[in-house]
Image (cartoon, rainbow, N blue to C red):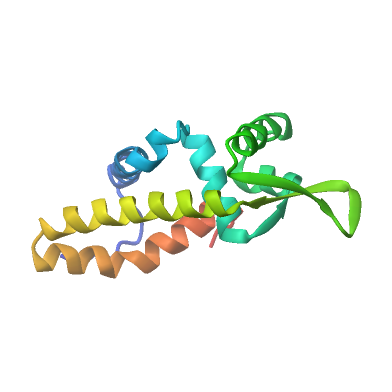
Length: 154
């Protein structure tokens, strides 16, 4: 079956949205995250901070789509848990930077590992052709994620 369609049929977009939501919800709860008492928002922020090293609070708010007041609360909770710390921005003393602590990096590593293990286990239950289809779709899904992040349209 060819997937080269001039337009997306009316059922594709809702199915794609639904499956992305189900995948996200299934991968969200990990033993490491639950044990640390992290909400999905805190997990997302921690993983983001670990990925970028140091980031301004304002940039983190923009990237995560969270208002600055809420982001300050999330960062305060993560800092209280010893997972991130605020540091002064050497280029702008009025701005605060956030970076992950060693404990934050370790927790993020465990969360990513548990999610990867869950995906590997699920993929092992699929046949080779299904796994090949998923692998072939990855570049398009990565592009879709980037378009959703930037608001870009082709």
